[in-house]
Image 1: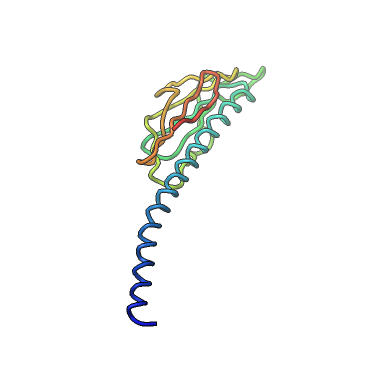
Image 2: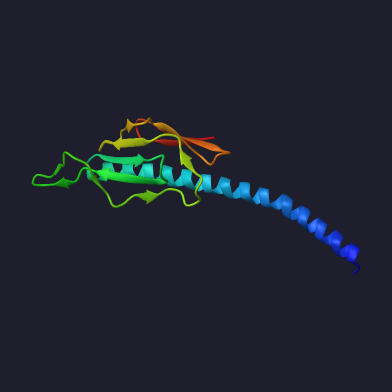
Length: 150
């Protein structure tokens, strides 16, 4: 193998790497956004189910300054059992994105009634997640159905 062949081989390899890196980077960003959307959608549905199962209101809050959400609830206690009049946090804040670079369009707090209905106490029932290049819009109906659209 001559030096010219070696240089030609290295040139071809560098062009291929130069093409592959941006493609892989975009694919990973799209995967991170898809995973974040799935996490947010699942957490909304799970919080609604908890409100229905316990018979007490629940909320879920998404903060645009973090990639976390926080679930709160009115605790069921007493005899006869009744829901508390104030919300308590359920555990700590839960991350909905591990990839970084995923942002939510606006601060949003959704409140779920024991009958399964939902209302937005902060923000609206429609909000977006973006990775800077792609945006997915999450829409929550008044009865808790979650739909995602590009």
